[in-house]
Length: 374
Image (cartoon, rainbow, N blue to C red; front, side):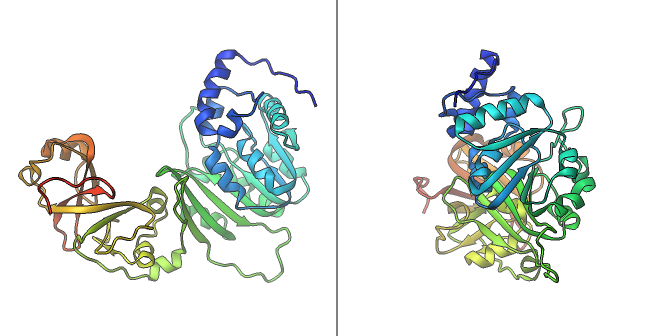
């Protein structure tokens, strides 16, 4: 099958290739791929997150109601016999047809408004929807009712037309508010890439094919940090509410959970599941005497714990400074401690269980320790 070239400015293509090389390497490596304007490419999913989505759902039929550039749709289609891409912008539809053909994807492309297509479509196994999260002035929004399409308005119809609804949302979303709107949610996936929270995926049980009398189960919260080789951390909100954490002064090792876990809020569950102690109920830093090498986050060897005073760390001129449950800002504290930014040393300003304010000095595992310190 011959693929007709699209007439898109060379400058747009060069900019697109530069972004795709890092963000979607499979597309970058495919000859003939054409790229849209920069905003569409910046807003599309990365290959890491798209591949992750493809592990969550499978079946005979998939409809992507907000196709966009088509990255998510192309990877999701690998798990379905029939895939339909729906997009309101004609130019993006033309681009998707071209790129899907380049990639060898048999995906039906429909140029239509999401709401119009949804009203007329037959029920399918899975609907994927990624509502736009910008207002008419280009500002970012996070509430379900502020997104386009408005999930508060079409939520009921979405559930009538699928077995599973997969929603991609902003990492700023309030998870509790989503669960109230979609009480049949089965899983919530918080996805970080290289320890930066990127998106929240909500898997909702649709009404189509739902068995009569099927009981509602508490949704499982899944925290993944891509593409690091960490096992996903999972918990439920009920388990978190009833869990009892153990507290301790700083011991030999310090642990900082990854960004997905910090967003999800499983602060006591992480301590229980990995056998570590919390420093304070609100600090979200953990400690142990034995190194838990598979902890999902950063691990530091503690070298000293001091008062928050310049003289206590006078031998350190450069450090990576963080504050956790500590008054003030990093900038103000850095100025007070006369610390330059960077280097191999990490300093955490935090509050301990006895409410004392301290500095914890350490290094990530595998880094040479400070000379002159035990």
